[in-house]
Amino acid sequence: MEKQQQMKDDVKLCIDSQKDELYSLSRDIWSRPELAGEETQAHDRLVRFFSQAHTWTVESHYKLQTAFRASWGPVGGREGEQALNVGFLCEYDALPDIGHACGHNLIAEVGAAAALGLKAALQNQTELPVPVKVTVLGTPAEEDIGGKIDLMKAGAFADIDLVFMAHPAQQDASFLPTIALDEVTVKYHGKASHASAYPWEGVNALDAAVLAYNNISVLRQQLKPEWRLHGIIKHGGVKPNIIPDFSELQFYLRTPLVKDLCILKEKAEACLRAAAVATGCKVEITYPCHEYYNILHNATLANLYENNGRSLGIEFPETPSKFAGSTDFGNVSFIVPGIHPFFYICTEALNHTKEYTEAAGSERAQLFTLRTAKALAMTAVDVVCCPDLLKQVREDFRLAKLKEEM
Ligand SMILES: [Zn+2]
Ligand SMILES: [Zn+2]
Image (cartoon, rainbow, N blue to C red; front, side, top):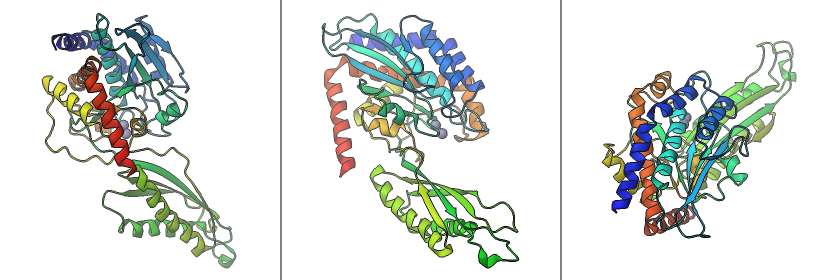
């Protein structure tokens, strides 16, 4: 117990001693916002950050152009024993026009800080129950594409035993249910004609788009309250006197549990096809992105995180307000036990607004960001020091997955 406390003190000391470098890292990413899959400068900055200490093995462009991996260890345990690999995830993509309005620069900072903290706690330890490794994974393209899912498919999580990351929000919470998401693109192909002279010769693709939009709007009334179905008309014709021969819509479909997405898809597709039948258009329905899963709750990790957080002054609201967002961490949580807490950053602004962008770059957010990183690393300390806790974390993971399949 005493050793564990000492290790937690080492976490705090290490993160506090590097607070300037960590803020500078986060600020550099914040001041050059890059879109999903294009995070070249953020990637380079993080690779430099981990390379300069010479104690991390750094792999740039790891499996994806803007992903990276930094690893350290193993230490402790007995020779030849399989190491426990603790992973910290860094996101760093931004949004069009409004920059780091989701605060992913702070996610990168938390991941980097927590990894440094855990390494500091481990480096003087020889008597750990198992050998431990620390791995930082730079996971690009969360706001679009789903970089973590591409990394998963490429095997980037295959040797990781636990994953930790945290996301800026409006409140501190060890867990908030996020919801599953898929994106559908629908294209209608009709036939152009003079809209006034020969309208009967045309097949109107804009009419199909309008009907589809209205069908979906009517369907919404019959959906469960937590389900979401929202979209835009991307193309609706080029000129009023030409019957549009092409239209395109994009919708997001979301349900609290990933297993319900297929039900929503079926209902939505019926609406989209009906619009084609009514207008005589041809319809093309595609799902161009990865499906994002909801996050699996790990109660043991969440409790440990809350205890550590409280010891650092984090207050967790009794009943946290809901958050109907989605993340590709959900998919990761189905293959590796992990935790994705949310943290307050000293603003009442909401994610995806200009005001939030400002808050994510400001010095005021630093105290909240760094104590979140400390709480994550301290939670990792608890698990690596206590094999029973690790067993419990794995059992929670197994049961949560089982429940999901029922
Ligand atoms: Zn976001
Ligand atoms: Zn985000």
